[in-house]
Image (cartoon, rainbow, N blue to C red):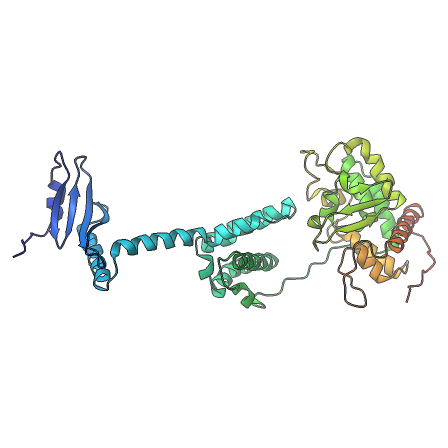
Length: 413
């Protein structure tokens, strides 16, 4: 007859004294506490492997962290696996491997890997990383990326929408979709659930950048810029802004290596552009003069307009806007981004230049009659003439206090 073992009690386990060698405090059915010489107590369960019949021992944790009742529960679960022909030890190893694999394929791991491969401007890279860290990782970061559903994404992104950051919510959803596509490409997921969320968020509120489009008022703005007594670099950037039609961030990040003053051209690489396409800005003689004047001051730096606090970085995001406010132009009147709208409106409505030339110079998507996108040098001679005509027009506005009558230039058919 098999030997009968009295069940263990917590008191017996606690009061057992360690000896010079490991001893076993048996509970029955192969379950026991191994009492080591150092006083540590480990739960063990002896069983026979279902295929080979060889004896094996399964660790069930330490006492008292794993109580007597918990240890018996773990033994019972292992017995159920064994009854189904599953080796509990091998099952645990497989689960551990799967857990490691899932952790390696968590949303946060894949997202950080994807983020590290982007070539965005540093400011945008930091912004996307902050969105992920603050709004996504706390809820979805540890989840296996292949297990995240469209509803999971929507619940988390709606938290951003509900606090009023609708545009950020749309950007975050777009980033999550890009991360899922990267996961598919690298074999970590099979489909992109974010694609199912089209139309699930409220549409973003369209933002209009205030801009001066009255010629007389524009003349006043140009004279105010010339009279600006703040930072020399900021003043130069403000003087150049009306002449080049670029976005404020593109202007602030201009580098000397991108500018050919002899050719009168500024070549902006694709990674700095919103549309991710390289862009060519023909420089008027007035624009070249402004940049040449700045060359002795910043020509030895990377950036044409370095920041005041850190010359290795460009002007701050707020530099141009703050200067406009100091000159008395509030956010309802003029913004740094508004110089683009000013040029678009007056070149079309006053000077009569072709809209496609204007849009091309604004780096908007312009297509030929066959639907193909124009490249950066398309219509360059005409664009060069337009930029020079615009600079001359601004000089006239500046000099004539806004009382400028310009012959209407017929638009080409």
